[in-house]
Image (cartoon, rainbow, N blue to C red; front, side, top):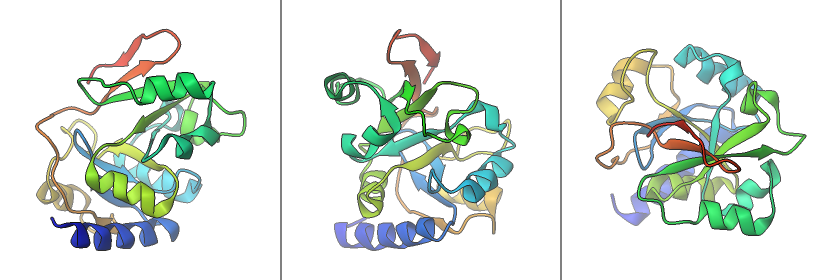
Length: 189
């Protein structure tokens, strides 16, 4: 997709997110379901689509470190060294959440899972919004995450407000999640 088309599609997706809508979009690994992380009504719709308990928490992705700083507690050097380190696989990091961060993002944890996205479509979308978005794999319970629009339409027909076109690299699983303090792998990627 050329840059002009990508920009147009990202503007459309951003407009829908600002209105409280749900979208699907490509990431570095698989398609994700997304919405405004501070819109509880939208969050509850995503959790219902996935049959996901609120206690598990959610991941947010951003285009730039500055978009994540309000959400996590850490010194800026640690944040930049972690989030900007060249991992061989896309990695999501669990940082201590700021006290104001809603429980629907952290779930039963004191941490918040965050990732800087390098995918052109997801990155452009976060830049259009000027804030992070929710990122949870686009799949119903028990199914592998979607890697194309055909599966998205099959599974979520009329339940999504927009599908941001694009491709996903040759990964079959969501990103790895690691705890920033301990280095412990919380989810294999």
